[in-house]
Structures are given as C-alpha cells and as structure tokens.
Image (cartoon, rainbow, N blue to C red; front, side, top):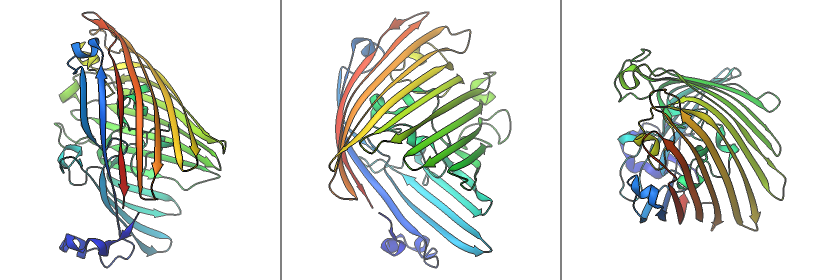
Length: 369
C-alpha cells in the first residue's frame, strides 16, 4: 500500500528533495519463504544436492522498495519518475547485481501522444515494471521457483535492460502499442553502447484489455555482443497469450517461439554442460486460477521443446513443469502462500543424456506497504 513520502523522512536529504512534490509516494513489499527441493539422480549428477531445505527470499514476488512521482507540466503534459530497489530479505543485500535501483530507474514524459520512458526497466516481454505486459498470460508469472515460473516454457530471459528508451501509446478501444530499445543491455558488461561489441535489445508489444479478456503479443530481438558471444547470430522470440475471467474461474494460455536464445532458463545446468551457447524451439503453457472465498487456488503446466541452435554443439531437450499454489490473504497488505511442483527435462547430447528432475514444496508470507 502506498504511503506519503513523509513516512520516510529518515531518508534525509534525498527524501527532503522530494517533499515539494506531493505526488511522490513510497511503496514496497517483503516476501520471505521456505522451500524443500528433492533432486533426482540425473540432477545430482549435474551438481544438484539430493535434498535441499532453504530460505527463499522473494519466493513468490521480488522484494522491493521504491519511490514514484509525477509533476503536472501543464498543456496536458506530465513528467514522472520511478526508482525501484530490489533486495534479498534473508540477508539484507541489494539484488540485481548490487544496483541501488536495479529493478527500475527511469524518467518519463506523458501526454496525448502516450508515454516516453528513458533509463533502466524490464522488457515489454516480461511481467516486470512499467512496460512488461506478459504478467497476464500466466497465473504464476516469473515466480515460485523452477516448477511454476512462466519462463520455463520459453527461450526468453525476461530481463531488465540498461540504457533503454521505451514508448507506450494511449489506449484505443482497449488496445495499447509498446516499443523499446536498449543501446547496451548491461552497463557493467564489456562493449560500447550501440556497437557490435555489446548486447543490444529491442522489443515491441500489443496489449488488449476489455472486461474479463486480456491478450498480449510480444516480439524480441537481441544482437548478442561480439565480446561475449563471438559471431553468434541475433536472437528472436515471439510470445502470445492472455487470460479470460469466466467469473467462476480464470483461464490462462501462452505460446512462444524462439531462435538463437542465449539467455534462457537452464534449471539443472544440462545445456551448459553440453556447451550449448544458444537454443531454438517452442513452448506452451496453460493455467487456471479460482477463488474459494478469500482463498485463491491456481495451477499451471508448461512444456518446452528445444535444440541447439549452433551446429558445433549438438543437443536437444524437452522440459515439463507443473505446479499448484494456494494464497490466503490476512488483509489487503499481508498474505500467506504455499506451492508444490514438479519439473523434469529430457536431454540428449553428444556426450551425455539423461532426464534430471526435481520436486519442490514451499511457502511463505508477503507483506506490502
């Protein structure tokens, strides 16, 4: 729940500079969970433990605190900013590589033409931040471990990007168009902005919302930097999905195609062991969510079929993940959750084959402010 910036007067001179803007707000959430994971023999052969019980910070939703604000410039124009910091609640460290505002750091200008963004923010092809539109395609989003995360059936990383420009159009009859471009995906990596030595990223999206219906379509392009990936061809991904609220339950579906994906979910490290720099393939996911009084029950099944996209590394694999979760709110700000899931991969490579799997059971508490 958002509060006045007065609540953080202890932030000192930084906060004091924002007092002149009454629209500035502080918000955040803390998620602390516990999870038990059991790995199969093939998974242990890839370096995983047989059994693992651990505290999982941000298990269902990323821990964060942030500041947002707007200023009315007149003539229909508004300036805005968003500064969002991620952290790990089990040890108090900054997340996103130690960045102070690693989740989002942007300035925006909006008017009748739409909104222009500049800074660091999540991809349009994700469920994160001011521009991400894929959150409505799965009941789980990018959360609840490897058995539930909606990126398990894709070849996309759903990352945040530095040095980015973004645009979101006004809504026309429920439709909105979005686009973004990153001149250098990670400022901490080698390479120069807008040069072939650095990763460059672009994405576009179409979003539709009307009553119980939601639909999203995204396309991604990544020019992999020569400093890290050599002459690896550009990566592409297309994802389409959405949900429909039937009042008695909500149904979700998502489909994706990807090529030359060099940043993807490798749950057991099997692709890495095979020396596979990039994969190509397709994936599907379906899910349901239903309320029983105040309690929400949701589940999803995802599937990915992929193979090496580089001739020098022959490998192929399939991935299945399924999970069931329960959420119970104590209030609008605090809820409990629990999840049980299963993930398995069938891999076949020139030097190794197997079917690593894992079962995971966990839960936790989320408090929002």
